[in-house]
Length: 274
Ligand code: MG
Ligand code: MG
Picture 1 (cartoon, rainbow, N blue to C red):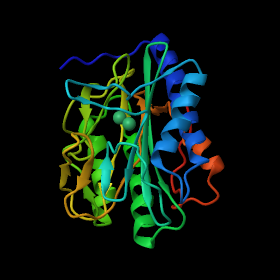
Picture 2 (picture 1 turned 45 degrees about the vertical axis):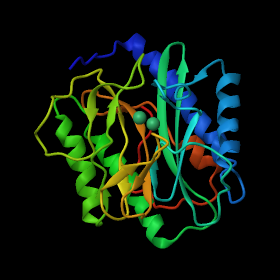
Picture 3 (picture 1 turned 30 degrees about the vertical axis):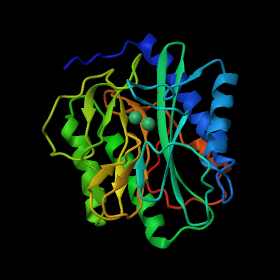
């Protein structure tokens, strides 16, 4: 496994890419409501990214027959991740997880947020709340001297305490000039196990959490991942630099949350850039 610790100059680039992907999700947030199609959301994201002198990070990702065709991954209800935008209209009560990637000056940004269309059920709001909280708990473990397992264990503990399923097949990852770099960052694990975290390691932490069991299956389109039991799933993702004492969170949800009239969760942890 090749792990590349980033220099401050590289982190400066990643910080800019992270800010752009965060602002893109903030633009998309203005349009998430019943009646919008996921393709319309995709157009909003793509035109914003290109207007900023960057390019979409997911479009064209993959190889052979399996190349992702869009700027956003839009995953509704029992879709966990990698949903392909299309003509489907959101209806009130939908949970839609939106994952976005950008490339700015050769460096990737990657972030995800689960939105509510109209009003969602209490059970789905609880799922969002817990998933969001688990992300924050995982991020807090991204400090020098901890181990990778500390991040996963923190996320898993928060989610399983509420009876939710932690997806095993899909994990977070390192990020830099490539979208997916080593190491893999699982959302489950044991404290004190796994690779030691060093300063400058830059990773995406992205819990994918199911209201029911953790099992998932991939559809015949080669991308869309759904829960095996048909219950909804939530997904939040931050880019984080491992630092001594306190992690540096490169992405921010503040652009999104500034435009949401109501949050589907209570924030119990404060995380801000730097
Ligand atoms: Mg992502
Ligand atoms: Mg990612």
